[in-house]
Length: 129
Image (cartoon, rainbow, N blue to C red; front, side, top):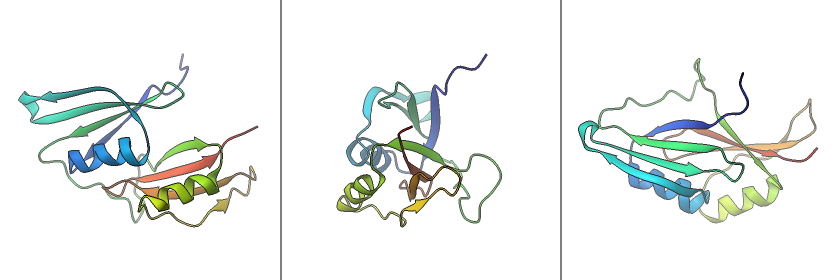
């Protein structure tokens, strides 16, 4: 049955802005970039260090996603990092607003949230055993 998450798909409102955010700010590597003329849509495959991917799509008439108040469905994407505090500072140095670091009451791990250019909540979660 299921072995791992292969990818998460994200639909953006401004392709170039989101491409820059995911590649330059977050440092994800481009696997493939294709313009699909019949859909007037870009599809950008981005590699995560663990082999997973994010697919970034643009569509000309995509509706805005409701993030706040929280709605049913996908809540956020979480990324494992070696050091939440250092990652938070690195994002802030690049102009990204990041929430204060919190500690998961069940695992004792640090975590924090920030958002992509369209307000999609993204989480940094402390790695380790």
